[in-house]
Image (cartoon, rainbow, N blue to C red; front, side, top):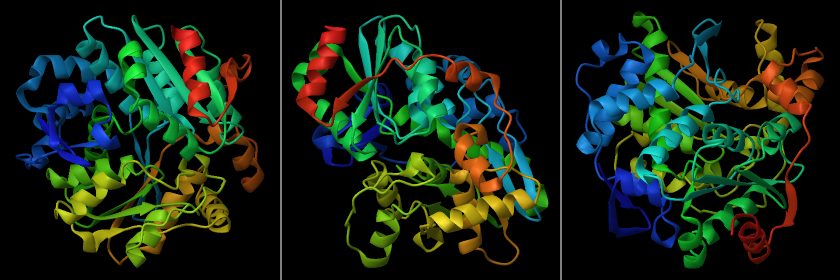
Length: 427
């Protein structure tokens, strides 16, 4: 697999190199130089999830990794389901919260862990990542107690749910967490700065587990095929998928799936009130505002890292721009969406409700709508119970985490200070 740095096209790397480096020169993200169509999609859709995913990843990565190796990696990483649940007539919810940390990022986090373990060959690795909610838990659990791997997680203090936070700040051992006095964009900026620091990179063997890392992105391609495999065959011709979008990695994975042959007709990258991309598509002007706090806090991102990948696909006509939509959903509409879904007998948290609203905003007659449930409702227990006026049962994994003390340290949004704290911890 050949990948190019979208900020520095002279830098081209293999899949292995891209995984190990994480972020390219000039803070550029890596993207495949070509995406070829899969053969016989119908036969592929008939396979079990893990077997099908192995074939998809083999197709994307190419002969860089043996088929048996990829199959074993996928079998270990994707050992939980992704069910498609009918909520209304012609509207289905893809539940991506059945992994160990109850969020869609378990797919990418666990596959990345498999890749890093294989590629590092015993060398020291430090995973540095920023999280707006679910990445931290998925990455922490995927790498917990892995030999020669330390994980450093930055999160905006007080701006993610307690359940999200406790899933990663209570682990300790090789998981090191910092609560940053600032926004997620501040955390993300610090991560990018670290990747420009040769001293940090050489001393710590730095890597990133955000959707910056290509291994996470490719893993997410697989569950879009899983969604299609569960859609009744007579409803597969006009499928519209709405993806709750913050950093835009998840919708980018859907676009890759379409580019290699999945017959997705329409995509909605639906944001909350942090609407940089919808405004950009309407005006042509990239003008991020200050990040606003919302019910859907994992999407409180004003400068999405994956937008260069999405835009390169739209400009390269890998996905038809006439069928790519991005719109924002207000806080009041988010609440309305949660209530409307609940009236159908289904409980959804705010991010899921935003995806549901995205289907409605760009709906046409006769289409099959799929909206993504990216996290278990109990991860947002306070907001869900407040909006729906009903009590949620707490899954054991969350109840156990909530009972443990938080081990995170508080730091300012200051790169120099954080660099010293990391060196003090990791040497």
